[in-house]
Length: 149
Image (cartoon, rainbow, N blue to C red):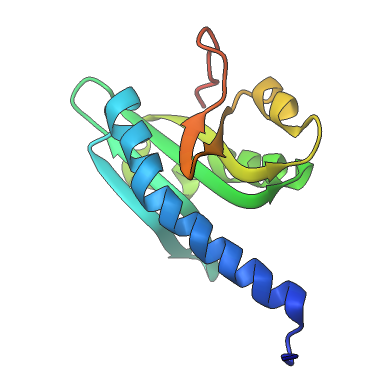
């Protein structure tokens, strides 16, 4: 049965819903267990100066950790995803001045990655995560040092 939106739109919509469900479960585990995050906000939306910015997952921790983590989730990860995450982390303190004293780190997470994009994301200083057995797992090497903005 055809829709007025077309199959591509509908299938992307359902993949995005499925991906968001995985983020709620497995990304929260990564953020709390591996990084000590105490506050996790999926789909954090901020409206400021007539602009709306949505962060797929925003996690923060005080008490000695003093870190904010921005997670961008894509069903298909392209180079544009790196640029999008770079824009968000570089403007993070402007968007969220209440976290101005925190370091900021980014995670680019995805289901399907274009060739070479994970490596480029790491070169930009981001952690990377992929789906394995319906669970997000970090895919950065153990000795990887993520950039702190």
